[in-house]
Image (cartoon, rainbow, N blue to C red; front, side):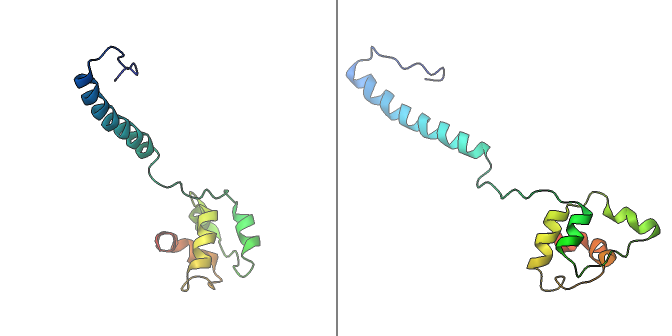
Length: 109
């Protein structure tokens, strides 16, 4: 059964027990395969650049100067855009600096 080969020459009593065990093993195998997928598939969003993010959100002004430009590193602007639209607190914030400074808070909400 583990190798995927089913026995064919079983007596009636042994065949009954084998069928019970086979059913349990099949269910276990199915659950294992489903579990490897981690549950529901999450919606994949296409990655967008800072320029695309600003064009999609025209009310946000790019006020990053000097060392503040470092705030852009390792930010997922597609997720940020979705989270901003869903947030009552941050949806109308016009400052890119303030939004990126509070990136973790916005993303986690």
